Amino acid sequence: MKYRIAAWAIVGFLVAGWSMNTSRAVWLVIMALGFAVCGWLGVFKTNMLVAMGRKNYEKSKLLRSSPLSGMVLKPWYPTYIRCAGIFFWLWALAIAYLVGFRNFR
Image (cartoon, rainbow, N blue to C red; front, side):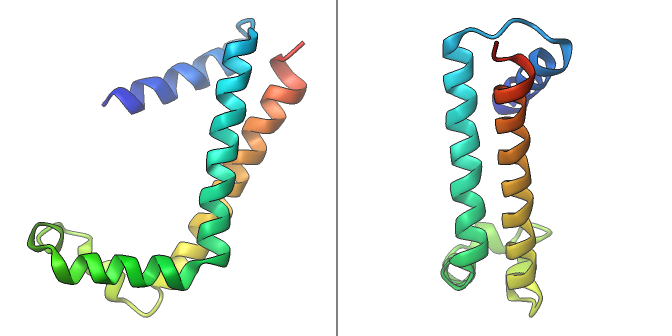
């Protein structure tokens, strides 16, 4: 819940045009780098992520009981991971754009 509130707070000050100090800019750059690394893992290390997801699926009864847990066993799951990686890259680019060109003056 707290992450959802933090995400909306970040979107709020980016959209509303609040002034951005250096600590906010550094935080957003760190977030953009985190999204970029997640995207890189999703696109280039897909097999590692798929193997890890399937291994965790086999080990955990709690994970297997969730409604979408069978998704890791589907043949299209690697494609889903790659698309998610591209989506993370787009978020990283959007954050970098907003920090660099919109609010960081």
